[in-house]
Amino acid sequence: MPGRDFRVRLVLRDGVVRVEVADGRTERLPVLRTPGGEGGNGLPIVAAIAQRWGADPRPGCAYKVVWAEVRVWRPAGGRPELP
Image (tube, rainbow, N blue to C red; front, side):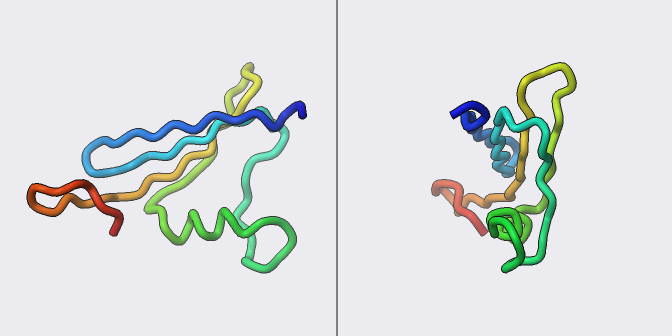
């Protein structure tokens, strides 16, 4: 279906995981709505977990990028964990 393709990118840098989702729906940028309202509840969940989030329209491109950043911590000698 046109406009339904997407790409996900994860970047770990300085204790922060950045999740980026690029999709072809350039006519719509995400708007944080009250949970239970019209539309999905995904963005309120992202806003509750992430330290920062946003959307970057890409003028002249056929996609936009919606991103969120979550701080992780690493126990001594262990793997990174979510807070």
